[in-house]
Length: 475
Ligand SMILES: *Cc1c(COP(=O)(O)O)cnc(C)c1O
Image 1 (tube, protein in one colour):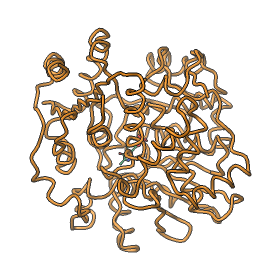
Image 2 (cartoon, protein in one colour; image 1 turned 180 degrees about the vertical axis):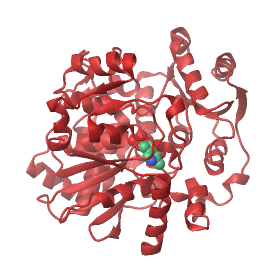
Image 3 (cartoon, rainbow, N blue to C red; image 1 turned 45 degrees about the vertical axis):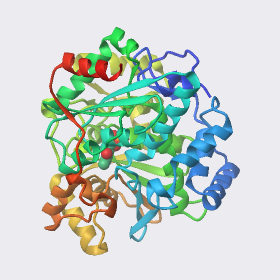
C-alpha cells in the first residue's frame, strides 16, 4: 500500500515512511492511494476472527491491509502486545454497553489514561519503538496538551527505547485528575513542562521549536498529533469491532454517533465505511464549538479565531479548526488534490472559510458518504448525564453525553445506533458533580493519585528556555 498527500504530492511512500511524519511536505495530510475493499466473504471472515480470536487479531487483519513494510509476524506481535485485557480492562477491549433498546455505548476509554486516545496512542508507542530500533534512530517527541492527548502520549511512550517525550501544558489549567495522571509519571524519558500561560502559548512554543529546522533536525524532534495516519488507522479497528458486536449478520447496517473535535475519530469511521463496512450513517456530534455541525448543515466551513472558541465542559472538543477534516473533503472532491489545496491553503488562509453549499459534492456528504450532524450544549450535557444516570444507573462523561444527546435525536427505526464513549467521568469530575450532585466513581487503580510525588518543571512561556531544557536533557 502506498500513500499520497491530500494536496496532490504523489511521491510514492509506504507506511513506515510516513509513520513518524506529521504533514506531507506540500502541507497536506497522508491518505492511502485507495481504500482496500472488504468483500462479503472477507467481512464474514473478519467477523469470525473477531469472535474467536479477539480484538488484537482483528486489529492485525485490518492493519495488514494498510501496512506491507513490517513483516506479518512482527505486526501481529505488536498488536498482541498492545491490545491486552491488562491495558484495556476487559478481554473484549471495546465492549458494547446497552443504553436503551437499539442504542449502545461502545466503551473506548478503559485504557491507561481513561480516554479513547489510548486506543491509537498505545499502538503508536509500540510501532515507534519498533521502527526506531530497526533504523537505529532516536526520536524526541514534542507536544502541547490541554489534557487527554498529552497523558495518552506519555503513557504510550513511557519506558520506550529510543524515545523521549517533552509535553507542554498550561500551568494550573488542567483538571486536578489530569495533572496528577501526567505529573505522577516517574519514567526518566518523560518530561512534563508546565508553561506559565494558556494552551495557545504552549502550542505556539511547539510551532516555534518545530519551525527552527536546524534545531528540529539536530534534536530529531517529532510529534504525535492527531493528523498522524497511524493513529487514524488504529481507530478504524474499533468501528469493525463495534459493528460486529451490535449485529448478528453482515446484512444489517449500523449508525455511529461520534463526539468530534479534530475530526480524527469520525474520520476513522469514514475510512471503515469506505472499505465497505455496512455503516449507514456517521453522525458528527459537536459541542458549542460547532464548526463541523455548521458545515454538515450548510456546506460552509468557517474556522474560528481562538478568541471565538468557547471554553466548554467538554473541553477536548473545543476546537476552532478540525485538523483531520481535509482528509474527508479530499474524498468528497473526488480526490482532487488541486481543488483540496484551493480550499485549505488559499481560501482558508485568505478568508478563514470556504463555501461548498452550491457544489454538487456537498449533497454527497449526506447522500453518498452518510454524514449527519448535531450539536449539544452545556445544558444538554447536564440533562443527558442526569437522564442516563437516572434511567440506567450509568454515569457518562461530558463528551460521551454530547454523543448520546445527538444520537438520540438521530435514531432510525430498525437501525442499531452505536454512540462512542470517549472518556470516563472521573476525568471531568466537576461537571459530573454539577449534574448529579455527587462526584463520579473513581476506578480503584486511581485512588489517591493526586497525593503521589510529581515530576514537572514550570517554565515561563519562552521558546529559548524550553529549547535549553530540551538541549540539556538530550545530552
Ligand atoms: C480527543 C477527544 C475527542 C475528540 O476527538 P477527535 O478525534 O479530535 O474528533 C472527544 N472526546 C474526548 C474525551 C477526547 O479526548
